[in-house]
Length: 346
Image (tube, rainbow, N blue to C red; front, top):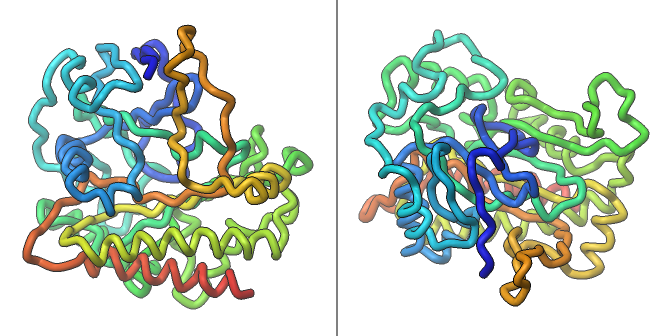
């Protein structure tokens, strides 16, 4: 595989995040995500190689990066780690790295989490890269959102968030969405210059178990962009199959994952979506396709996907042999599957 240099000067702000922390970067092509992380998250990605049935539902892991050094996309994870300027420094209490530990229990905090200042970033494939206009929904899993290392203040704050949202009742909440509204709605004050309506984390907190399906409808049915009820129903059915796959994988693992998300992505351009569905392009390809015989390192013509579903955010994830499946996360996965199933049948 031809190696494409990736250095700090190549990185730009990542535009496709539906939720999460500040400070996420990408390269100019948008093929990769460079996300500040903890050593615990890196360790989980590395260990997932021993759990291939689960790893298929994770973004492709390419290694780690310190922004003072260069790295090559296409190297193995070991080579990427070896190419960094220094080995990852130990990370202290993970609770102190986010916003939760510094907020009062009733304070919802900023629209996104504060950038993690760990000095370490993880390099992942960008799931949204093979879409013309990716619509993205971040579904935060778990009724319990904190791990054993969380401070009492963080536990109290996150328990309050769970109790006041669908996290407690359904085991998930909508953490954020980006939905393309079409070219005719760019003058709408709720739509940004690129034609997207962005729904921050407070949007998902307004729903109850009885009406959260309306948030999924907002994601899947976008008449202004040509995504009508029939097309939305088709997409719901396809996403459901992937979520069921995640459910099966989690039921077969002994793990604990706190504040992990399901990332649901589908093509928001109606014509591109119809073509991808006709071509049968779904989730199989990696987002980086480089021709080994191309001495100039040019990328092959990009293949557009119709949809993709992945688990993301593993800062508080561990394998727990002997403790059984993660019912905390599974509650949210099953609830998500139920809602998608209802929408697929509408």
